[in-house]
Length: 128
Image 1 (cartoon, rainbow, N blue to C red):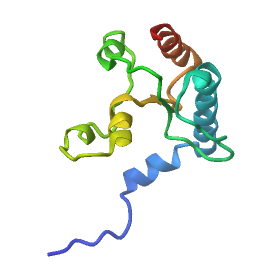
Image 2 (cartoon, rainbow, N blue to C red):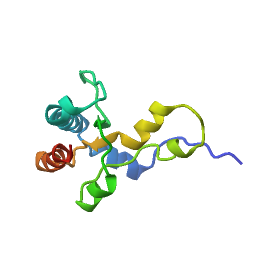
Image 3 (cartoon, rainbow, N blue to C red):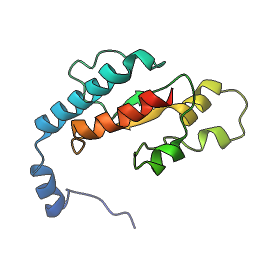
Image 4 (cartoon, one colour):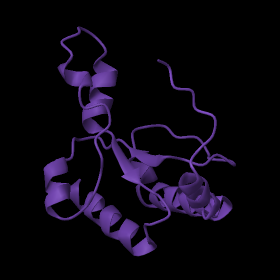
């Protein structure tokens, strides 16, 4: 028997109402631009200006792979996107496989301070 959804829950509605979306967007853009200023000259992934867009992360693709375990061991969080792409056993798609393995989607959400970003940036600049 199908279950139709008619509206979000009262709790979810209250949580969403409590978020200052313009402020969150401003912080995400600021954090993205921070990484662009710090790491942009080393990023092999060509990026366009944000304009009014609100990014999910700062996609950093260094020339050489960076060991994510080393980042994690230092308390630096960088997620892995599409971890299964390289293990699908499909020929070709080398660019896609490289992205899944090497792109570092640096977190930029509103919970991160400039000090948090600087710590991650400093580490990435010293890994080269």
